[in-house]
Figure 1: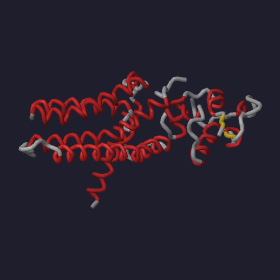
Figure 2: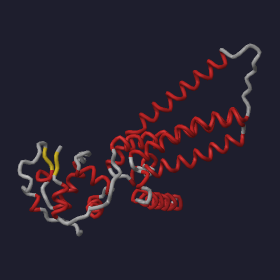
Figure 3: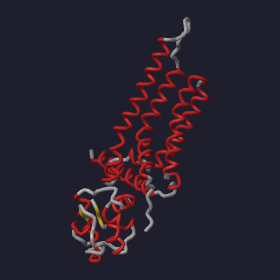
Figure 4: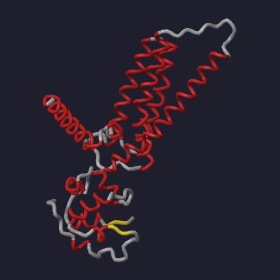
Length: 81
Length: 176
């Protein structure tokens, strides 16, 4: 599973800690998610997409993203950095 | 009934506060590197072997000294893995719960293998002992078995978790 969490989080100006607090996980888990070393449950994926203001399909995909900038520049954080 | 509920709630709050402090504590990140984790595991393995030797060869004083050293190394291993193997569900996120749950089967296999091998060695030692040798089983021998088993049982989950984290090479950082 591939994801664009890191790009979207950075686009929103959120630190790992702020993002972790927003989605209710430990800050290390954010690192695991961003590196693709952990695939989140559906509930966590939905919380992540809500926190970053993007649809789930813009953040997660089965294939690597062909256009690295696609859609993550539309990220609208629902949390403060 | 209400009193017990309030005690339980307070206990839950204390566990949560303590767990959050442990999980977010970055003071010990220097011994969360793969090399340091492996060194801690090796130290714990070594001291677990020294405990029965201390009790059986030297008696109570070397035995208790070995137990005290084991307790310190055990606390260091636990701190290195942020006590994840021992924390309850409500303070862990889904990845940490997965990591915690995944260590118990390998830990059980580790402990059962060590106990099985030790029991066989003990039986062989009894069966093939020299003619006329007597085998006593007193306070020192019981202490050797008790403290070694305790060290194995308490330490195995955190040891397995430390080895997994060392293999992953991840030490985590809140930076960025």
